[in-house]
Amino acid sequence: MSVVRRQNLDVILLMAVLFLLLFGVCFVFTASSARAEHLHQDSAFYLKRQMLRMLAGLLLGYLMMRVDYHKILQISPLIYMASLAMLVFLLFAPESWTIRGSRRWLMLGPVQFQPSELAKYSLVYYLAMNFAKPNLDLRKLGDGLMPQLLLIGATVIVVALEPDLGSALMITAVALCLLFLAGAKLAHLFALLSTAALALLAFSAKVAYQRGRVESFVESFLGNAEPAWQVKQSLIGLGSGGLTGLGLGNSKQKLMFLPDPFTDFIMSIIGEELGLLGALTVIVLFLLILWRGFNIARHAADQEGRLAAWGITCAIGLGAFINMAVVMNLLPTTGIPLPFVSYGGTALIMNLIGVGILLNISRSGKAVTAKGMSQVPLAKVQWYRDRKR
Image: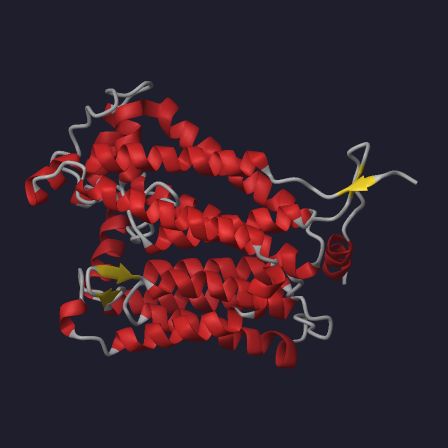
């Protein structure tokens, strides 16, 4: 019988995330320095804040990597309920907490916290724990799928009411991916997707700034009008970078032309300063994260770990896809940041915690033979069986 050993830390995943963090540090500084100097008389003002948040995220991610992930999943219902309570509280928050027509952040003195990011990941862990229960059959609509849809729907509705349709879309998409991977019927998922899409479109029509974004996107996509100012400046930045870019720090769009150059539209600055090659490097790093994340899920020791790994990977991958699509005018502006790269606190910390749990699952994966060959996980076999029924 072959000698077995446990899987080691997934170095490729770790390095891909660290390189993206490096991109983030560099481009948060270069994209924010002009604004920081103008508003705070300190060109490194936003860089310092981002570094503190990154260090906090790395520390929490390391702790999540060391703790048994089953214990994290066990407390996920409490974390989810706390995040839902915070989201409901925001609906009744003071008018002074409204930023750009939306109440997305809890104002805790100098600290701003976005509960929708906590809700997104805690829901992933909660659903992973639920879907792994042996007596749950998601192919049954009544006592199987419907209670889970109520859980997902409550989260999406409260987030949409902030209003934050971008995060509501993200939560819906990640939940649908998990339902599919856990064995829900395609017919049920298609009906759910159609209903969610119509509901989000109807809701966006009632919110003035969201309606404006959608109308502007549709008109520009059909060629009937120019893109909105922000998207137009983003495309100018991407186009002016060429193959190799204008050089680090030489962006013109960051000089008060492109709004949010170091947050939602930081990818445009990367394309402008490092060109197509720099943008492709970022895309390749995200593809590496997707590859390693799905590989970790495939080799997870149990169903809970598999579903949690899939959920985390989908959340990161969808966030990157939506952000880049907005920057290239392939989707309406959503407010979704580029994971690990954009300036921000809650999203960065929650993503790093997610990576810590991913690395935890990779270290706890199934046994590998000394020859490097591994057995097929029971969860994977069960997934194929569920799909064939």
